[in-house]
Amino acid sequence: MHRRGFLVAGLATVLSGSRALAQMNMDGMSDMDSMPGMDKSGHAGHDMGAMAQAPAALPEGAALRELPLLANEAGRSGLFRARLTAEPATARFAEGQDTPILAYNGTSPGPLIEAFEGDRVEIAFANRVGEASTIHWHGMPVPADQDGNPMDPVAAGADRIYAFELPEGSAGSYWYHPHPHGRTAEQVYRGLAGAFVVKAKADPIPATYGDTVLVLTDLRLAADGSMPDNTMNDLMNGRVGDHVLVNGQKNPKLAVAMGAKRRLRLYNATNARFLRLAFANAATTVIGSDGGLLEAPVAVEEILLSPAERVELVVAFDRPGVATLTTLDYDRGWMGPGRPADAGLTLLTVDVSDAPAEAMPPLPERLRPIAPLGHPTVSRRLVFTETMAMNATGMEMGFLINGKAFDMGRVDIIAKAGDTELWEIVNQADMDHPFHLHGTQFQVVERERGSKVSKPPYLAWKDTVNVARGETVRFVTCQERPGARMYHCHILEHEQLGMMGIVDVQA
Ligand SMILES: [Cu+2]
Image 1 (tube, protein in one colour):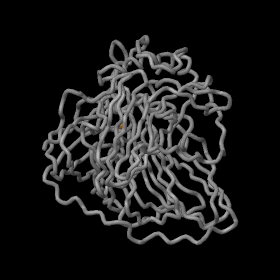
Image 2 (spheres, rainbow, N blue to C red):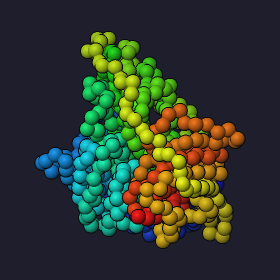
Image 3 (cartoon, rainbow, N blue to C red):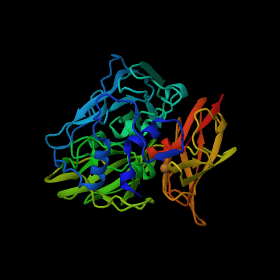
């Protein structure tokens, strides 16, 4: 492949168009919508820089900063009312360089939203990014017309209110990000994503463990401090950056006393980076998944967190010294050159003091009951494939579900509210694809690889599940609210290039 051919402006044109098959026009010129605050100079230069130069060094070791909390303006319990403005801003990642980003209320990751089960939520959204956007409430059981679908864009400069109730039992680690047609990948990698934690009224996890949200994002910086546009490599594999950040910081530091236990919520908010994670020198227990607590804690050595997945952990820091959160190697199937070095990254450094912590209560043996969804009455089969072909104008790529690229005017599946369905996701492609279904949580029942069928190690509520190449994942799900819902690969570049469909849930 010719690097010279990666004319990013041409690719941006492709991405902003409605065609799901990418026409990789090697000599395309930019007619990309202009976005205020973005550096428009030297697109091709950025691209070359990103490919050819060592990544800029970022400062490490600063104290972990807490995410700013989105202020509740309601002034009474039971209602969470706030504003989110998506707008251009600047961030200081590298010494002495301001990086143009997109931000919610000026920060990236966006402010942490904390509300309780049973609350009504009203969020006034102001779109000031200079092109259409939406807010999608990832994983949350909100009405279809409040869920920020690509069919409900908020125009540049426009405002709208998202309103929904948080049902009892919905406590969990959700997030929010844009979902406009054809522009999701870029708006997210430029900074638009934030955590939304729904708290339980009665929480079995001891309060002394704290509750710390760690939003993991993936940054690529050009030599001038700007974020380069997506390259052809990014479109194929999904955009993987040069630095994995925790709450916007590289390898921040956390200080704890020996014997302390901490509750950590890890979010994979990257466009496309698979994170196989382990804590060195600290015992790790999984207590929750995307959609809230498990039935019982599960001790683990490592966690695979694919793009858009979340996990809730309790980490016990019983040995003085340094405990690090690091990455292990994971081969998710990489097309072409430039497979990123995934192993050995230190994401977070925890200094464990010699002085013991005050004794902390043990983790309860039971966390909450999870009722199995029961016997499905409907079965669906979704097959993922990738296609690639050269034609007269360039490379044509497709990321398909059941042989089709996404079409906003087409309903792919008609479902009935309240029906329990079995979904079988078959990955016949050469890459792993993390599958996400909007509007509800599901329960994985089995995975099949070769002729080997395995059950998941525990029952859990999920809205995103990795489907490894050559693998089939089966889950049961039940949509309770009518309306059109999206399902798609959460490698956002793949979603944008066609790997998405619509399920119309009828009352
Ligand atoms: Cu994918």
